[in-house]
Length: 278
Length: 254
Image (cartoon, rainbow over all chains, first blue to last red; front, side, top):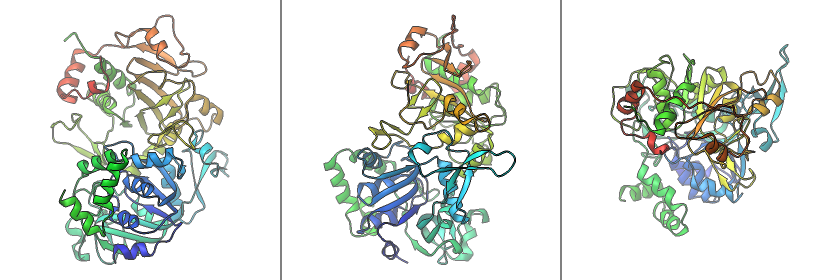
């Protein structure tokens, strides 16, 4: 598959789940392809990082469902902050664990999953759609009924994959990428490197094969496709580039120059070339 | 070694927050919390479980700030999903920051101003709602001022004692705000209505200083003791083993 073929399957107004965490192993090549498309009015579901910031800055986003949006080494995401402070997006801000529970409920085809997280906090005030549920057993405890977060599409990035859609993470954490895939109707995976199925165990143990071909509808090889987020052990975060991204955000002229140089290019290959030659 | 810095006093006060925790997952957010938690593990609380800040549980103690140290001993795998499981099981004590905290320990890390259109969007709720309803929570606030210690937080991320009480005994049974450590003093909620109490003032700070820098009425004893000074051994561990580059003193001056 190609990046543009994936984006060709997306429609305005869709709910799109994006894997990774903060500024870590984000499917950035797909995010950049969406930036080059006319798509708009998207609902994003994310343990947010620059994926959310970039799409907000480009006016692609109607609503974000998140627990945080952060660049990790830079705690606050400047473009997401700007969108929030201008009230230009609808914000569904949840506890991090509630977000997991919503994805898990969707993955298991359950209407909700109960949790204590959220009780008593302003998560309940700012999300009036959230309801409580009483345990039907003798304890009678009241809990939050975290509703399923069903996704139209999930986008994830893995270290290795085969053409059939088996994916492998070689870094320290899968995050919730499997749940994003299981919660979505259509699932697309980019990877650093396509390998033969029989070579998947050459670089990692069987425990790293958490994404299987039942969970994926399309695979694209995108070397450095998570740039500028980290993708260990293939590469770390490009901190210099991330600083450039964050510092240009506050100055319209600098941001316009950043966009012209890196984002308003014809293809992912041109982006990688621009990054390489800086 | 009779002299010590405010940051070192804070590190010891933070370490004391974890006394008695034993085999719990300790999640110190920030530089001085990381220093304090490592100090506790190296001295009176050797059984604490801590990660490397990524997904490995470390059996030994490494220096903060990326300083070269001993080879890490990995004793377990703790990806975020497992952290969430531990949160909900209760075997965790987190020390979070707070952009705002009020007299009952409600904490805000989400945004300043109205949620609908904030003046300043901060981190977001992160894990604060789930942490505070499930397991012990403490706070580290390096900039004690009327802007951080406020009468009313703009948004409640981590819930305080009044919110917990309103939920009832059953829902609130795992809620505990252990302590608040600031650059000026140590605070807890061991009062009849769980309002914040000044436990001790750091050496060089007066009770008046703290009252002046706090945006609500603190519970004050007649005689407020001083936060204990670091021992000679604690100073050696902080300076030579845990924080040889002095990262902690960048977070707190004096």
